[in-house]
Image (cartoon, rainbow, N blue to C red):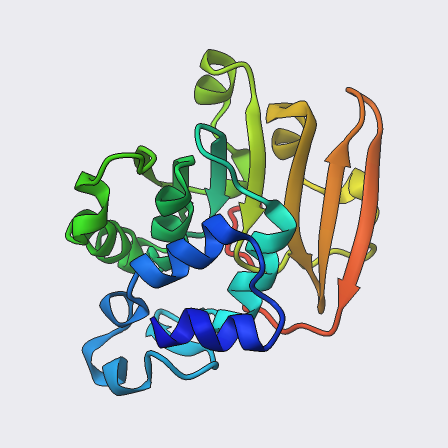
Length: 216
């Protein structure tokens, strides 16, 4: 699709699996009807409840950092419209998608379930949870021996970007060698779990996100 080609030309979309996912998953099916004419522009759009579907460039950038692969188990915090969820599934990853905003839970889930992509061979399994994402999914993590990767769609409002301030649930539910991609303030961070006690960290500044909604 044209959106995928545009993101390739801009140099942000490079991974062949992600390129095919962006071609397969039509953003227009994941925006409110009043914004369908704007679905292919490279800008965030309102999805109600004070939330947005992120700018395509930003979604591509974060997914390139995450590097999802077929068969991986990925926890997604803040699925919103379900567009990123469907992109992850299109790559072949299994997605445990969490949304805290009640008004978006069913809408985002329906967007994904009504999209014909999920019936195709090689597409990952998606499971939805309407709850506070900062607690993660401890029972699921225990059953699958930890998530391979975690991606967060809204910004944590922390005083510092130190990994110690990330929700303990995320750190504990991630496999050793796994990665968290999360916005903190106006930056996107990569955290790689080197051991049960240590994480590597890399910052990518210059972004704007809606704040993460949490009970904490």
